[in-house]
Amino acid sequence: MKNKNKKVAIHAELRKESQKFDGYLKYEVTIKDQNGKLEVVPAYGKDLQDALGRVVHDDRVAKLEASVIKKVPLNGWVVAWFLGLALITITVHDNIENKNVGFYIMGAILMYALATVTVTNWFTLRNRAR
Image (cartoon, rainbow, N blue to C red; front, top):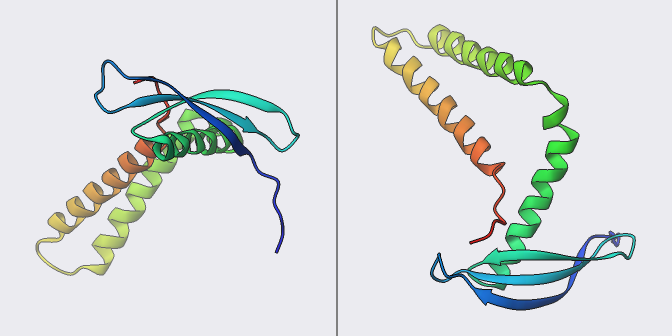
């Protein structure tokens, strides 16, 4: 089994409870990265596990944005979205021989839009001051 060098949380300290959002806490987490460098980051959540999960999520989003999302221009994403929409419409129309094919196409379009909103929501940063 390979031992991957990853970031490790080595110390966490509770700083304060949120005044605005009942039940949220602010932690200061000391993270040791792959090079051995220590970094202190604020982490917000309902408990320490939630706060660390938000820090990890934000790190994944930042890595993915830097490697893929930022390299494709906005026009490319718009074209890709409409090509996917056209593909769904053509596929549904060719595979369903029914007088109510419009309902199936609209359902497929709504599912595609829901998937787009879900993916977009995943890319929002979670570790924000509460």
